[in-house]
Structures are given as structure tokens and as C-alpha cells.
Length: 142
Image (cartoon, rainbow, N blue to C red; front, side):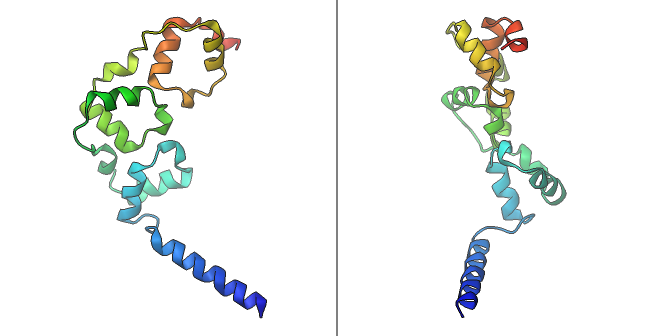
């Protein structure tokens, strides 16, 4: 009897949770994926998106943004950008911002720390600051 109650409980719980989220490959799911950071996509998510969704959704901008938003994005690792973030940045921000570093000078400890940080966790500003301030050998011998 207890087994039946547990089974029913879990069955109802799964039904409720799945009813709240759009089914994989649906228009709602596709829209949700354009808001989600690409680093959070699984390989299966990527394949399903390419098979099921209008790829134009990836290039749709969220609209006008201000320069503060653009500056904030240069400090956020690109692996955390959603497809919509990328499209919005390209539509509204100076792409050269991605190549500009901060005006701060960094020390050797910062360079070594960054050399040990996976590249996907670097922001565009981190990359530019590293290129301007750190010896390339630091990447080879962190």
C-alpha cells in the first residue's frame, strides 16, 4: 500500500513539474533557450535547438540598450552570454569594446591566476587585459 501511495505521489509530482515547463522543441522551449547562457546548454539542447527552432531566434535582439549594459557585458564571461545577449551586443554596442582592456595595470599574481582559469570563464575585458599586461609565457607555464 505504501509503495502505491509513493508511486502515485511521484507520478503526480512529475506531471505537475512537466506541465509547468514547455516541452522540449516547442516554441516556448525555443524562446526559453535564447535567454539561457550557452554554457548551460547540453549537447542535446544544442542539437534539439538546431532541429526544432527557427535559428533566426538566435539573432533577434532584445532591443535598445544603454552604454552601461554594454560595459557590463564586457566584464561578463562570454560563456555566460545567452544567444540573445550576443545578438543584442552586436546590434547595440561597439564591437571594439570587446578588445579594450580596463585601464588598470595588473600584477604577475593576477596573470598567473588567469592562466589557471579556464578560457570560457574569462570576460572579453579579462582577455584584453591579459594580452596587454601579461607575458604570453605565463599561459605556457602557469
